[in-house]
Length: 173
Image 1 (cartoon, rainbow, N blue to C red):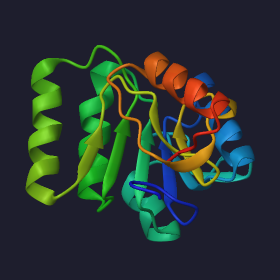
Image 2: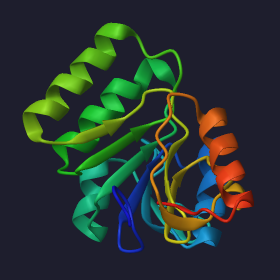
Image 3: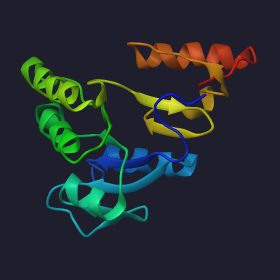
Image 4: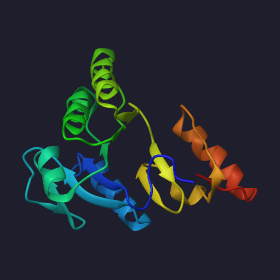
């Protein structure tokens, strides 16, 4: 059972040219995640691990389509990045940044609610559908495909619970 993401989810990585964005994009691609584009203002025209980079989310969506955005943008810019993804028509925004100012978080959450967009975060490890799609920083080797949903406020706790379930032969969705 896949709840938010699956093999067909077209993912756009915001902040793809940074150290974390580039590193995690490679891991997601190796896992089989359908990363169709990346966005870093001023870096359009580049490629990271074969993924085209654009200056704006709207450009990336227009050229490649898109269902979800994964943001590796620093906290002070996270709301602007999320709002850009929402305005580009993406239905899911995953915000990894810590330290997002409360008023910024409220702005992006309000716009998301108005537009029917789901936001995971800020300060999240992301979302994983084991064996299908990883959108975030989860250590995927701790997860096993199955039908148990795990939701946690703590990324490390979700990894530990999933590892324990996997060791017991119980997969997660």
